[in-house]
Length: 342
Ligand code: KG4
Ligand code: ZN
Image 1 (tube, protein in one colour):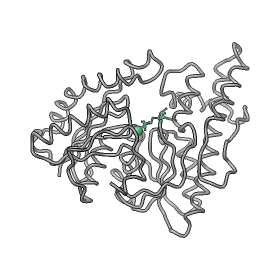
Image 2 (image 1 turned 90 degrees about the vertical axis):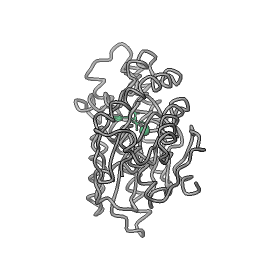
Image 3 (image 1 turned 30 degrees about the vertical axis):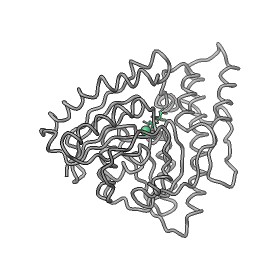
Image 4 (image 1 turned 120 degrees about the horizontal axis):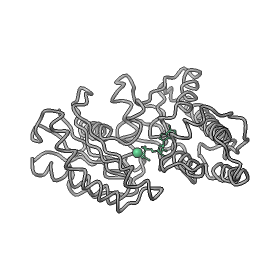
């Protein structure tokens, strides 16, 4: 079975073709960095136009790369939410049009489910149910993944998402948008105990996160330092900030493992763009080892938005009996827990 997946929920236009042996036949991705960086963030209208401009270029290229024609594809998928509505419409319409013209199924994909299942594409030994930390630019959630389309939410952020907090701190330090990776790079040369930033909700009994107080504390520190900011101080801020995030994640995942002890879940997964962060991966790996669990995480470039994750989630949904549905329209908001009712 050959599946094509389209990702266009934010600022990455991506198309991939995979087969059901977990092989990538083609994957193309264009980051709209140059379109948005001058504005300091993603401009939805510009993103939609760029998706439209890049989509057919990428489609032609993936067919050449995979050495197949569109009629060889069995299932067409697109991420239809959550995300920026204009981009989602572009991707969904492309996949629907191809499926309609070739009389093939169209499978709408939840972007968060695509992140959640991605590590399974590379690690077939990863089995349901697993404990998941989903940490991206828009979401920070702890869930039990019982099966494809069956998610149980244990905790979520009550304000900013983890990736969003990384991005905002990066912006305060003068870096471009999507600056999470810059923080990680600078943190390597900094002292994680130089600044004592708060760890909101660290001792709360629930599994919810809060990052806005941490962000505000970093802002106040940067304002206080003012013109005396050096690269060394920036590195210390990054290291101290990242250390606070790691401690928050460590505490919440440890509590989650305690809470689900009776379920005997042996697999832990971290996915979403923040899963690229090596310090966070290390913390989670240590927790997994100490609790007799195994951590699964996709290789870094497949933690961020990509076409393979959409193709794989679409394929898995199709194999689980999800029917082709041309009536579905993109959804800016689409929580994972709602998949059970669809
Ligand atoms: O999953 P993703 O590519 O897009 C969304 O669905 O949101 O995640 C993007 C987020 C951004 O906030 C970005 O700064 C963050 O992932 N990110 C990182 C790192 N690389 C990307 N955060 C921390 N450390 C990193 N190395
Ligand atoms: Zn994403």
